[in-house]
Image 1 (cartoon, rainbow, N blue to C red):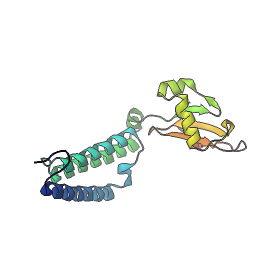
Image 2 (cartoon, helix red, strand yellow):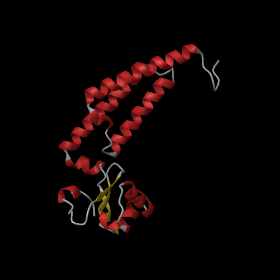
Image 3 (cartoon, rainbow, N blue to C red):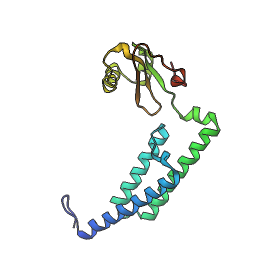
Image 4 (tube, helix red, strand yellow):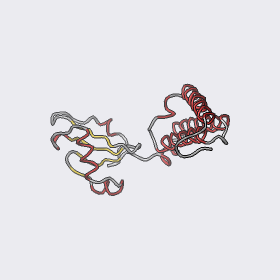
Amino acid sequence: MEDWLTAPWGTVLETAATVFIIYSIIVLFVRLAGLRTFAKMSSFDFASTVAMGSILATVVMNSDTSILKGAVALAAIMLFQQIFAGLKLRVPAIEDLTQNSPTLLMDGTEFLHDNMRRTGVNRSDIVAKLREANVIELSEVKAVVLETTGDISVLHGTSDKVLDGIIMEGVVR
C-alpha cells in the first residue's frame, strides 16, 4: 500500500522504466520532427509543449495509461504542430488569424501607454526588463517590444547607433 512518503519497489522500478522509455520516445520524435517541436515561437508552440509535458507526466504517473497510448498522443501533437507550421507558411491568413503581432511598448525613451494597456504590460514589467538587459541610461533604449512569444525584447545601444528597419518589421506601433 502506497502512502505519501513511500511506494512499493515494483512501482518505483515501473515508474523509472516508464520515464526512460517515454523520454527516449520523445527524444526520437524530436529528432524526427526537428528542434522546432519545443521552440517558443508562438502561443501554439507553447500550447504544444505544455500538452507534451502533460502527456509525459500522465504516462509516467498513471499506470493505467500505456506507453503506446502516450507515444501515439505525442506523435499526434508533433504531427499536428508540423502540419500547422507548414500551413502558416503557405497560407498567410492562417498566420494572421492565429499569431499575435509583436507590439512596441517603448519607442526610444517614451513609454507607449496605449500599447502597454492593450497588452497588459505595466511600467514596472518594462523597467525590470531594462535592468535585465543591462540598460544603464534610459537614453540607450531604442525600442522595447512584446514579442509573439510573450517575451519582452529590449533593443538598446549607444546614442550614435541607429535601429535597423528590418529589426522592427511586423511590429505593431
